[in-house]
Image 1: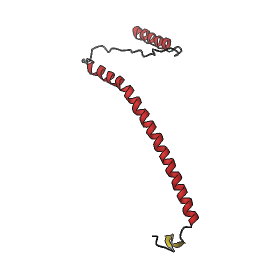
Image 2: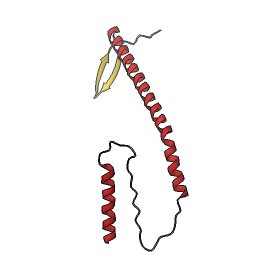
Image 3: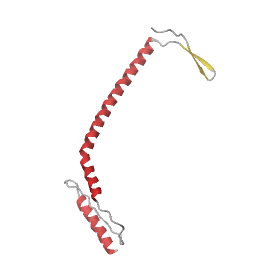
Image 4: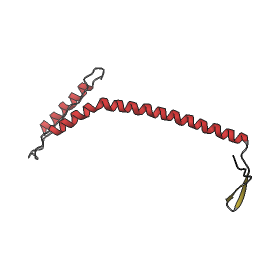
Length: 120
């Protein structure tokens, strides 16, 4: 089954190294390390598959928001440049509680911006 090689010669910096056959212990250690690497690789595959499944599920749930945004941009009317530059301020806040003073800070920032632009 196996042909027996007694010596493997390698040239390294002009020197020759002589290596004999691997011992049974060395082969068993190598086999054990290969099996451990296989186990690690298999567990990494399982973890990545679970993450991929979760990402797909999250994407499926978020897709309606993207479609709504796409429809918004498709329906937006685009007109030429107006003579006087205009500003558009869009306030984005949460519809849930427990956000602290987010709503107040956003509305205060908008009021300050409008006061500044009204003075100019």
